[in-house]
Image (cartoon, rainbow, N blue to C red; front, top):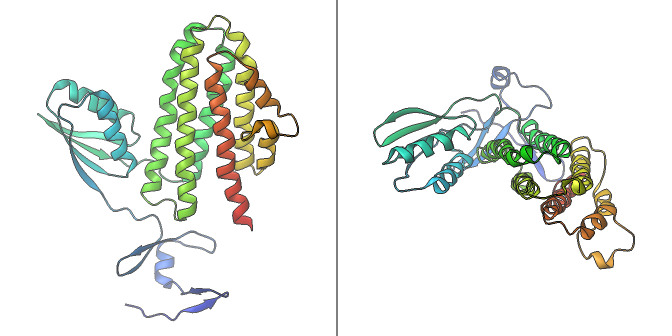
Length: 306
């Protein structure tokens, strides 16, 4: 035990000096981030997120594919590192195996009759949450850009929905990282968690759009809507990651609330409100989520600057 005195730092904060040997051992420098976790009997200070292995046993006997993927995704997102799964039929095992392959880092390391062992293997992706968060945006942007090129190709549209799995896999990993303590600020944690769920829904809406559009006779009519949807997503990416833009820019394009009260035209809102094609409904849903995401992410940054 090393008793240390508290030092006044500003009007309401107290600080302590970290032991030199510990700082040197972890190669810490001025400006680096350390992690402080509140526990029952005190504070736990670590150089990185606390990695305590979490184990769980689940019984998936008599479960179908939707329930198996739902349960294992929930277990994965909550940060469990080892999972013992009980099953009964070969079909159940096939569904478990298929679900595990969609969860980055998870692998079945042992399988005996009626019982398999899932472990989380070390992944380079679990190193920088912000990079992972950026990757979700980049995948959605690439999908919207590709979508503009294949609108006239009904065969390509019919299989495009499979790409939603790419978004889901990264979102699942990002939510898992939040639950494992990679985001220390509780306020930011809640905002990012909500934002990830909305980005996942954007991917779902895009998949639904392609399914509807593949059966639509004049997909060319919807190209302008895909273009505007892509432009709004790009605007959000630039505003959040490049610090180029504010929430006002989004309101000028799409007045989400009380459209009858708006004083000036909002071109993206006007474009989508005039559309009557059923598939465009899903693109409009994406745009509205983008505006809501701008409020979550950009207003959060503005509050922090005050």
